[in-house]
Image (tube, rainbow, N blue to C red):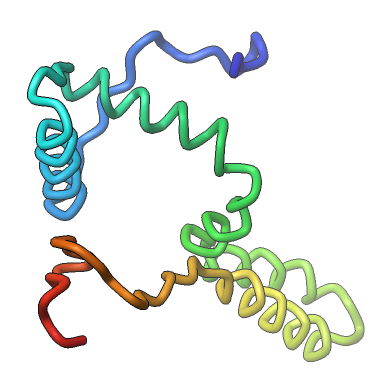
Length: 132
């Protein structure tokens, strides 16, 4: 996962987790320790592993989801509008631009539906003995 020479970054990148991500991290740590009490790591070591593992395993197949999530619609539409001013069919170009922006933004992760929960599990805050 090396970057080209002109894109080399510093060795360390600090990233702050928001509240939801911090809670997820805490839950992952707790659940790993439930499996084996001798699990030990530094937070940055664990998050680095997750990012690298995720990149190698899922990133390529999920790229459209991330593009849709972080797509700058306003910047895109403004850029295309400036280009369209010099064309004879401004309305047509603008209509196509908006349609393309909507298509890009429509990509999202589909959460699996929970069916047939067994045992003492908790998924999305619902315990297996609770009615869904």
